[in-house]
Image 1 (tube, rainbow, N blue to C red):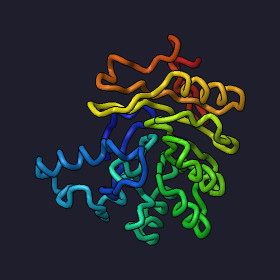
Image 2 (cartoon, rainbow, N blue to C red):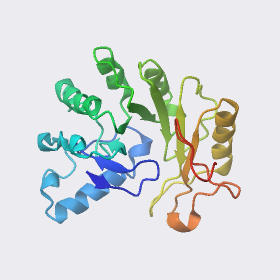
Image 3 (cartoon, helix red, strand yellow):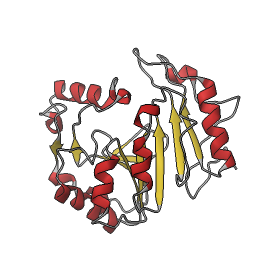
Length: 241
């Protein structure tokens, strides 16, 4: 379990590594680049580079962390990847249920498998369930997510590649928006971000703007019209207060 620079979480936990591309948002996958780097550094966790790999010995790690944290699950994979058996997913959820002093954030691009799993497993209240929406072509992911019985459901619109304001955000408890970063990053438009922010404000959905991205993401920052937006479910940021 590692500390992370991801602004909306505290720690990452990777009982699974490796994934495969399923949509436009995967084109410049940061996890794939990181996995290749770690493989070249002879990190044993990445001996299979970016092939899906289960790490049973890491399952109990959250229980050892007694201080409550927000924990991003499978930042280097997708918990609901087709190559991850449901019985292993159940083991991961059993640990999250047991370590109920933490908040676990599960983000998937495969909410169809999430929905199938949830029909036979009650999602614990301390597990936030989300899906990635980068453009209008993956709008069906929202429908799958909405049909999952979970206390907190969220969208990660990062990288935001199109205007998605026509989508129905009813039933969503949190929305994170961000631009793509890196040398091959695709542009994000301000009007796309503002439309989502306005919808969130009208519907009392916490809105988190992570970054503008680009080649120099630090320089481009995360201010939107001179303000930062970092709201999360059940709590507010210092900036918002």
